[in-house]
Image (cartoon, rainbow, N blue to C red; front, side, top):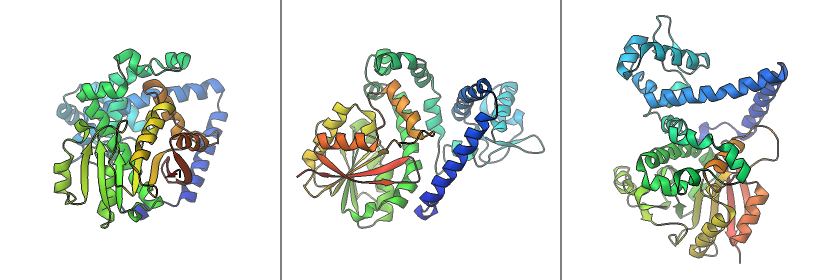
Length: 364
């Protein structure tokens, strides 16, 4: 497990971000506008190519050793010529590498496509490259026209209802979100001291990756993982194998109805942004009802910046527009939402990832 101390200092990362954005803007301004726009649009092809590599399991097939194209095609059960053409595009963006003898091999970028990588993005790219997800995005114009997500129109129910019933998509989504959580863990632990709380309750915790990491590093902390029964049904056995069963328990239910009591801090990680203001307020009020007056609420989500530069939150906000009733919010938006839910926003801690830790206390 990587150490939180390996996360670069935040000022350095922000400086590098400004430098990279400046170079990208300079590049766009050195070519005719229609060429720059075409280059941006063609990144959609690259996105699909990465998703195809993830779905086919190319990185897993190269995990033990480099392979010649014909050997790799045979191992994957795919057409050799088509594989060469896919790899040619990926190689041009330094995704995988080709050795002098013509064999393909993993490199720093493609290692994260392995299913067993410490930080694996394979299922994340499989989900975003899936027919289910891409079909929704083709209806983005309709979402903009109406202001309503297109998922319920296409699926006949909300995204979370659909994934609960169609567990092939649901399980892929759960694994994809675990990947996102893994990406955020080190920056979170470097920026914020979760170990100062005696008992942490993670609401909508998924597979519990954040609490598992916190408890492995803070022996005095206890935790409760709270999510729907179908999401956490296999977790107790995993916690026992990690030696955490005595400090980390699993409870099931819906945060729209009630949540566990007794926590010193309650975590809502990547939850509030999934829901409309009315739905998010309901979650906050349910959480507030379970909290002691001196407990702390920790919302871990993107806080949209004021600048006009590219930012992950601006992309994810459109994902919310297409598939959910939710949205990404500014600090002012979150402060107003928290107030309606019975909380006072007290602090926002930035991390090296797009996420921030928004700290709030129950109103007296």
